[in-house]
Length: 118
Image (cartoon, rainbow, N blue to C red; front, side, top):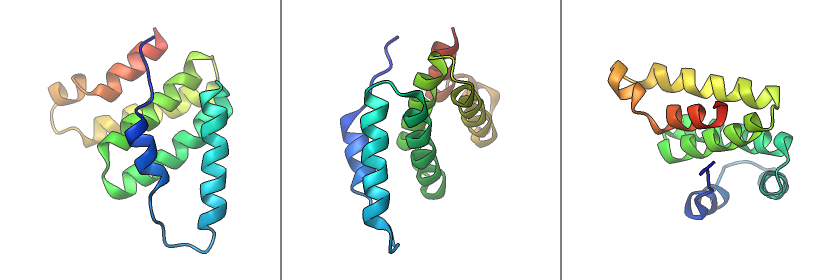
C-alpha cells in the first residue's frame, strides 16, 4: 500500500511543548514507539497512534489525526486486532466530526482505513 509517514508531521509532534513534569519520559517513550513503529511493530504503531490521536483531538489538529489513522492502519494490516479497533474508532470519530455525509465519504481518514482493510 501507499501509506507513508510525513516526516514534517512527525517532527512537529515530537517538538510539542507540553506542560508536565514527565516531559522527558514522555518524549523518550514516543521515540521508542516511533522506532518500533518504523520497524513494523504493530503494538508500537498503536501506542504511538494513541499518543498522536490524543494530542490531535485535544488540539484540533487534522494532520495529526491523519497520522494516527496511518499508524492504526499499519497495525490493522498486520491483522492486529487492537489496530483494527483503533482504526474503527478513529473512523467513527471522523464521522462524528463531519457535518455532511459527502464530507465524511471524501475524508482522507476514511480512505486510509479502506486501503488498510482491503
